[in-house]
Amino acid sequence: MAGSYRLVLPEEVANAVPEGATPPDFRLDLKPDGTFELRSQRMGVPDEVASGAYTVLGARITVSITRVDGHPAVGPERETLLFDAVSPYDSLKQGDGSVWKRIGD
Image (cartoon, rainbow, N blue to C red; front, side, top):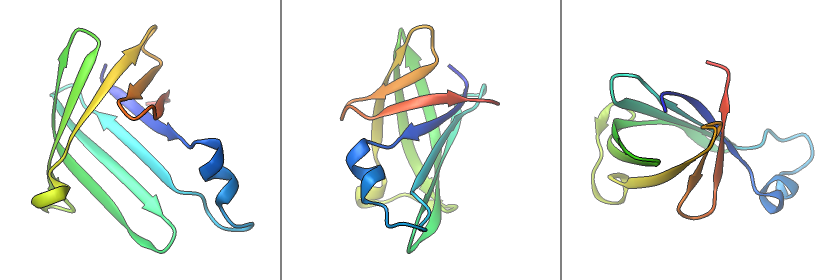
């Protein structure tokens, strides 16, 4: 499961990006040691890096955010995200229907 994944933007989000603006970009790096980094780049919002640990049980991946921008995650920042690996492990599907495609490492 370790590798890098990029969020595939839903069509309605991609179409809502103003012409000439940079669309939001979300990258999830699952590291072989069981840790991760989730980087988000959104127009008008400072870039953010969430990190923590993840576990794998079968095809289910549980990502637990414990730090945001190097500081302890508190309140709504301290999230748990659930993903299901899609064979042949080239993408992850999030519980809300979001799809993350594997990218070159």
